[in-house]
Image (tube, rainbow over all chains, first blue to last red; front, side):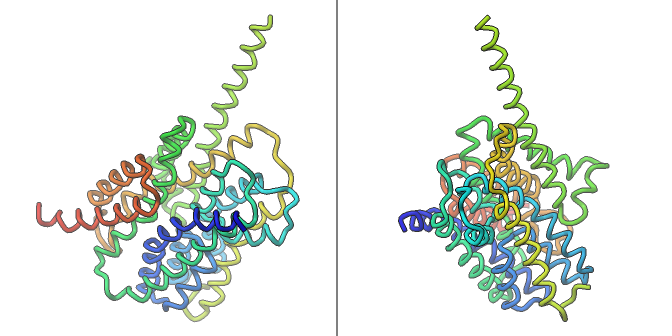
Length: 245
Length: 114
């Protein structure tokens, strides 16, 4: 029970941060012709920011089902990596149904907080962690959908930055404290800019809302950083060998 | 084809695809990966994903739907404020809300100044 409460406490800031972001989603969905109930259900059943934005655009545009599947898959592919990463932080004995519940709310922010735990992530802790963000994400969408007609386009635009600033608030503090994380953040950001601006390779970010560009930047960035560490480990080993001789 | 008439099917497709992506790895990977490179890789993934999602897209985030040119100024100033606040460990909510406020203020001031 203690673990559950600890999860709630840790997750509550995410809940508050989700409200302005999902508010934006509600606004946009209603502008596209979805009704507030539909927008709210999409949020509750997806818990995915970028994936939802892309999804409603495709539905409105009358895309084929297969394109909806592929785009949703590509943009949300990062959750697969996060889920794999999280599989290393839960007790190998944990039963499937608990894992299935946890899987529902592997979002960028919830995952980030869970992965910063020093110990294994327990089921009650993760349950507490995901409870309020699900509520906040759903509530914010509903509020945005209902308030859609009240806000000017300028205000609607400004709410769009909330999501990104939440990401910034998650990655900057650990990057300040650890050089390895700082390098990972900078390398991935540079790669992502490369895929957006350099002619020839920027095709990746033109289709499917940039899902491919993000995944490739992240995989390359993490692979480069992991390889740098591998090289350092190798050097340390050979150096130690030298001392022994 | 997706359309507003068969919206229930579209919503089901989105929800199922998203959930399957999330449940397959954690549901079925039960072994501890021993390889140090793989462990490091998975450690860096969250930071790399968030960073790649944020940059450079954050610079376009305050542009209203339908605007002909991106509103870089408000986004850039709000982003810098967010980075400074995050650097000082101000927490998710404060960073996000202050950034939204800064963006609104800049958007309101820009037409006055120029």
